[in-house]
Image 1 (spheres, helix red, strand yellow):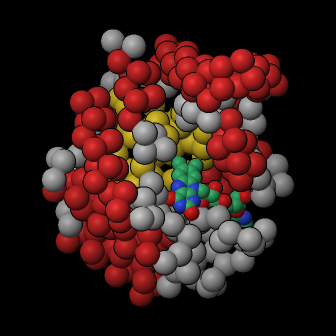
Image 2 (image 1 turned 180 degrees about the vertical axis):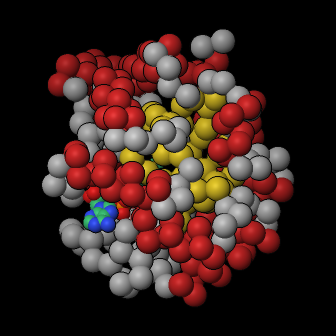
Length: 289
Ligand SMILES: Cc1cc2nc3c(=O)[nH]c(=O)nc-3n(C[C@H](O)[C@H](O)[C@H](O)COP(=O)(O)OP(=O)(O)OC[C@H]3O[C@@H](n4cnc5c(N)ncnc54)[C@H](O)[C@@H]3O)c2cc1C
């Protein structure tokens, strides 16, 4: 079913994001985590799309299995990296055959070791090119796009970035999922500015429970999100006093408060970046009931 339609039927939903484990030997463990999370009755589950090679095929295989074997509503991420109309069509055809109806259309990040994004073709330079292509050739898919409460790292300004967000939604995007953030005011300001520009589609906040200090530092350095100074300091203190477990319990507590506040202040639902780990997400969602 289309996520846009599911959203109109459900208040205060949760959705979950996974990434395909590179090593096939890790798949049984991955699906164990999925099984544990199924209890949360997520509105949809999404699976990321790697920058190249086998993980793209893995995205396809995993979304198919999430639908067929676990009865979940999946969304496949898809990027412009290495894209041609032939490769995109073949991916979408196979998604369609597997009964998948939702795609998150993205530009993608530069491959590892490459600082600047260089489009692989003139046909797919931005996420909006992908949205236009899918809308024209595969109109039956429901399409999500990415949004950035702190602005995309390459954008000249927030205004310009919001203008391009509106462009990809006008081209056929049905809803937005945000980049992770740790200050809810950033999300609400972003939504207010988007609404002022005439963007009226749902904007789902993306929340990442911090579970490891080293890992989160690497993630924010790649995606351009910021951790508030005070929160970062408490994470550093927790690491010194209680090690990784201290960081994890603080990260879960912080994310739980973020989620509570977002829902209380009118966010339509929450997209949880699970990092393929069930326990943090279970603790967050269960504590809300
Ligand atoms: C929820 C979510 C899920 C993600 N999943 C994945 C994943 O599975 N795989 C992956 O590789 N990456 C993923 N990413 C990361 C994403 O690919 C990067 O953030 C990437 O740098 C930008 O992607 P985009 O789709 O927002 O790009 P775009 O919307 O194309 O924007 C990219 C930049 O170009 C600018 N821009 C847009 N349109 C134009 C235009 N017409 N002319 C000039 N400038 C323009 C924008 O302002 C922005 O600075 C995800 C991000 C989010 C938020």
